[in-house]
Image (cartoon, one colour):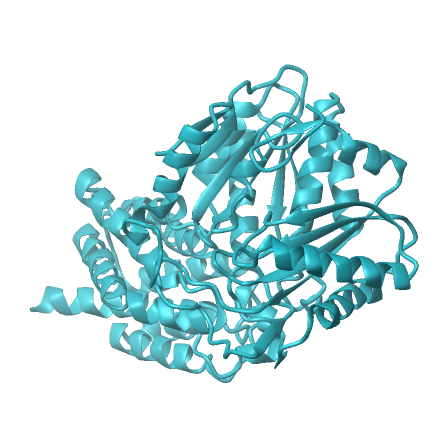
Length: 202
Length: 330
């Protein structure tokens, strides 16, 4: 079973990898967007880390709802509402339980991803964060490591796609050949799940 | 990197502190990033709130004042502001007559303003929205995020602002704003890429002797790259792209807008060419504005925006306005 501590470790791992990879995210974004994805995500997860330390929510759902609210109120752009909705919706779906199973997390995360698709209007193949999140949720039944691999493959698979949503869509065919920054940061978020699981074992 | 800044993290806050010092008619909340006209809320008047990423100055903070915006929310550089900012701005300016959000069509701006509208409505504030999407360089289809909002934002903010100043009701101010957007089209070119403080180097690689046609205002590359053209050739390309999309039936307002690093000497010369093309195509020009209004940091280049006006829209355009960047009649 996964407790609030697991979810705090998930957010901490995501914050650490977003911090480490901020420059890469910004470089990917400068190719087909406006060169700010790394710094924006870093600002958001810094706020998440600070809020979790201050308020110490004690259920999995409360951890994710607080984190989502921070992303909405600190990130801006499209990433703030989309990532914020992902975590808030997932947190709401987990309810007030003190511990949840991996199966419950998978179902809740699917709710969260559905929320992102509804808000942003994107579907798989549009070259967005959805292209990493949907395969990750599909693979979550086989464990966190499988989800992580699926998300990373999904992010890489955005390279040959033409963007149909977000700022990269304005480039038309010129968006082809570049990995989507949002799918890349989504893969980092999912990788944080397996990092949280590993740190529990160790 | 050659930038007159301290560190990238504080550029927006530093700019707001400087703006506050320069314009005592504005109330600038540096911490929460909201710029409000000092006399707001104005009884009986619809309030106009706009906002978007920073880096496009004077848009939007420079357009706050009597006859135009009631408040503006600057986001991080090229990043939409967050819902808290917009909801705070709406609460600060609402007189009870309602608030009109003027939103440029970018996914982030749309999502954040929609979330802000929900927050404001929870507080009992009546909110309407005008979406600006004037850029003909973007292919418009059901399968994309649609056209970008660029230069027409100035026309919408000025004309809807004049209607609000007259005391017209929210539905009417909203429909005038929509009408201005529907009657406006833009096309931009870049002669150099811009440098964001966070990245510290040009956001795209544009070799000397080439230009980007159909560029946006975020340093996102344009649709097409060509060898350098003359001012006259660029004017032909830009104006024809607009007229192809919007055959003119009425006189037009013309905005020849600099992207930030093109001097007025060049912009005025470019305007001469734009006026030539319009004359050749038989398009009557009602008013012309030349300058840096919707910029893209230090990008060199220019955009052209045309707005078809009837007598009513022209009257509202000519109405008095008093803001840091646009001022006449008062």
